[in-house]
Amino acid sequence: MELEFLAQADSSGRTLTMVLFLATVAVTIGITVWGHRYTRTATDFHSGGRSFSAWQNGFAIASDYMSAASFLGIAGTIALFGYDGFLYSIGFLVAWLVALLLVAEMLRNTGRFTMADVLSFRMRQRPVRTAAAVSTLSVSIFYLLAQMVGAGALIALLLGIHEGETYLGMDAETAKIAGIVLVGLIMTLYVALGGMKGNTWVQIFQAVILVGGAAVLTIMVLAQYGFNVSELLGDAATASGQGAAFLEPGLRYGVEVPGDAVQTMWNKLDLLSLGIALVLGTAGLPHVLIRFYTVPDAKVARRSINWGIGLIGSFYLMTLVLGFGAAAIVGYEAITAQNPAGNTAAPQLAEVVGGEVGGTTVGAIMLAVIASAAFAAILSTVSGLVIASSSSLAHDLYNSVIKRGKATERQEVGVAKLASIGIGVVAIVLAIFAQDLNVAFLVGLAFAVAASANLPTLLLSLFWKRFNTNGALWGIYGGLIGSIALVVFSPVFSGSETSLLGAGVDIAWFPMSNPGLVSIPLGFVCAVVGTLTSDESNTERFATLQVRALTGAGSERASAH
Image (tube, rainbow, N blue to C red):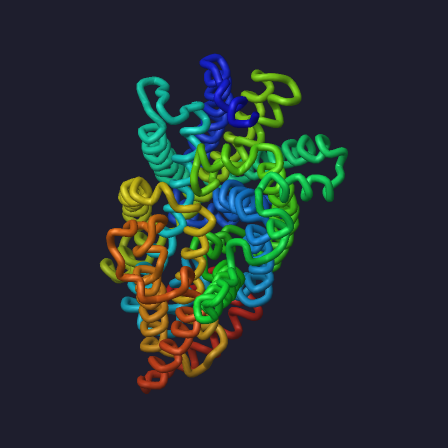
């Protein structure tokens, strides 16, 4: 039934969907142009003039975080694998406690624009800033891939293109590529024109759309079941074909393989590895860390996280209903027919539920609302990632390393804008080759890299007196190279039909899909060993860092030396 309904999208429905979608994009571009008028200095571009209130930054944080992985990837994973998909929601939410308790206030007090401001405060500037820029770019590219892949899948659904069909001369595959290119162009426009000031207001607007759209769809799904969640879960389990196993752990992660104790052990460890990466990764994500610099002081930074946690927590509860609702109402076959990784489950659910309530027109409207919300989330997150990367390249690499701190603000901002274009091009090209991967899984990899390369050096820099330049370099490069290498030699990259290189190439000797369980301890070990192999020590700068981190004294001059 659902497959037949989804095939009924006619030209008028597509036109209505596209008009509503383009209206959302037009509003965000208008906000970006407005923000451009107030972006004059490097502080405006990198941190929005540090003028945002707690609720404003909290909404922007939530918008950064509630990305394609949250809305498309998690809902899709729950729709296909039931209970196990909720692991992402739990991990993403709990992760904020680490950021709140260990990172937020200290980072705001000790840095200026980027993570490298903190890492290089008591160390040799040029090598540490170079390493931080490399790590920031690597993490951001992984995360960008997830958002771009989600955008491609969404465009194909938005245009109502099914296998063997075309629209505006495009088949489904061409439409996906067009979606990826479109997102790349728009995100570059956001960053190059609006900087952090315009980008933050775009994120606030998009957070309202995303949470509001998800809330409307959640209520419509629950209303179909008389707000009886138990009945919804029962229907989802039945429709999945898995029965009770759909509502229990072990369908996707930690799978028990009969007669193969070794593989079962690796599956369990892989589950643990993913959980650790999700919980620890947030505190090392560059686009999250730079948000702490957009507020006036550390107190506002802490309060903004409280706002963010409230919004994010509410949203993840809704993804439960959307995921199980898609399983029950849309069905496994319809979801995988549109997108094998399940990335379009939530928009498909919106179209089916709307159609059952008011026919094709209402279905098209609901699809437009939810697709626009998802697309807004994608654009919000990618623009945050691009501004984090471009700021790091301009502030850390260009100004501090190449120009030795002597570049003018105009030069630095100019380089940041050029960097945003380059990052956009790289992300577009890579995303085209990664279209069949689940976006939630791609974000899990980004979290693992962030937790392995950034978090160890950040924490040790803030809390260990003995920590030095050598330790920072070993920690960043060790965690970064270790995590990426383990991904390359894992089943994700080769050895199976679902891997990036396909079954024709098999270099997978690392048995786990997520490297966090090995790469995160490796990052800490490398940082400690690197520190102990060098005699460098700067206790005076550490004392200054501690005072600044705990009191905020002199924080506006952080990293100015």
